[in-house]
Length: 69
Image (cartoon, rainbow, N blue to C red; front, top):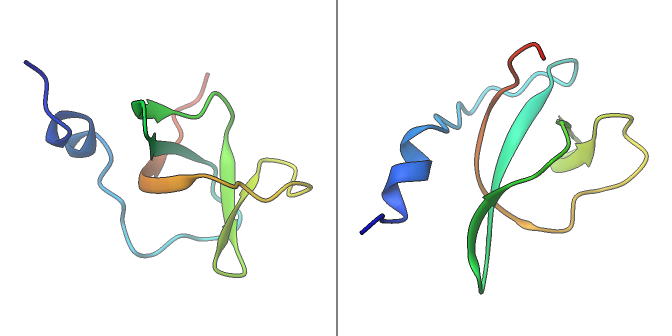
């Protein structure tokens, strides 16, 4: 049985989050944990979509630097 800790291990969630860096976000809701299908940036103490036009309205429990696709 998978536990919540397994996905968290893959998201080191470094406290230093430069605005210019793109991240993958691990989120959680009443159905479980999931990775957002879009890349995000950290700005003004909030997560924003890659273009910084929409704030992410989700419970973010982890993040990692996005890998080139």
